[in-house]
Amino acid sequence: MPQNSYAIRQMTCDEMRIAVGWAALEAWNPGLTPKLNLIRIPVLLTCGEYDESIIHTASFFQSRILGSKKHVFNGTSHFHQTEKPDENMQVVSSFLERSEAKQ
Image (cartoon, rainbow, N blue to C red):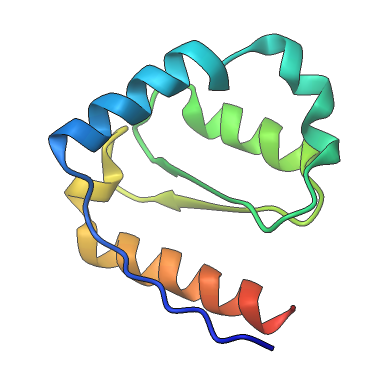
């Protein structure tokens, strides 16, 4: 089994703009919702405790993606990655390690 090396870091402003633009154009396409059950790779859904309706949305997506995991960052908003960067790194790293161990 190949050993992968992951480097987790905060996104730059340009990367954030690209990600938000992509999400606005592609990711929130309601026509894709029925296809969520076709995803067969490890998926980690994250959201902040005060992220408006995102906890509900993440729970909905989790119910449609077999084996997906969800983590709610307590006391944070939509930008939990920058509000709690250490916890975010730990959660994502742990998820990647567990996912790779299952392969």
